[in-house]
Image (cartoon, rainbow, N blue to C red; front, side, top):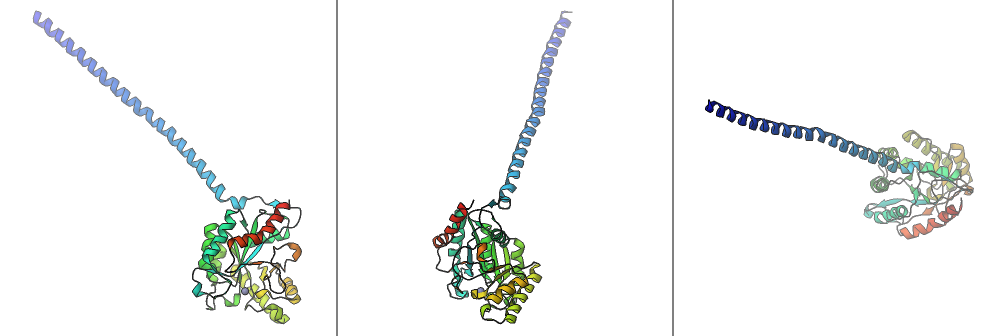
Length: 318
Ligand SMILES: [Zn+2]
């Protein structure tokens, strides 16, 4: 009897130890489960805050990258003044191109682009230039139009990569009879079309065979102006309305024929045919727009000095 009581007491002790043990395991299990059930909620909230942060970043990126298009144009009281720079060739391989003052080293050219960018200039497209020259609206007081004559292949190999690098526009004037005719150093229609599709380069006429129009008969002039426009219109699916007179040569017949054939904007050569190097404005006549000649010896500082008077004028023209 005594032994049975003792055995029972032992069983009860063991049972209570077991119960405490089971309870402890239960508490640990609940605590473990609680931590794991709660923690995903914490993660989710962290994730959602991360996502909203990413979305915020995403939404700011496009607006900053599309800023140039959204730039609000200003309106002045008087006509605008637009400095038009006249370039020809730009290359790092000077030996492959004519050794003349129009052949600009690529380092010099990039320094000029950097100077314009660092001083906050807007590099306008041909379309923007036309609006600036025919209205009182302007994208900025600091603006410049880069133009390139002759359709040199360096437009594609050297200049176009830099335009892409700095997101800048340019206008190229093409001698349409030289394109795809195996003349050394001239662009192909394929290259011209690729540059046009980029939206960074637009194209105007520089005639079919680059004669001095001022010395040509009326009919010869008509052929040069009419055929080059037809070539550009057909190949680029556009209505070409810009003509750059080869060597700045023109006479009264050139101007009336240009108007008759659908050209609205004509560009001169500074120093040729009485043209003065100065910023262009509507009152000069849209078919006789002056430009500044950029040569191999022109420095970025000299270029900035050329365009400064127009900027000073535009800043006062509110
Ligand atoms: Zn030319």
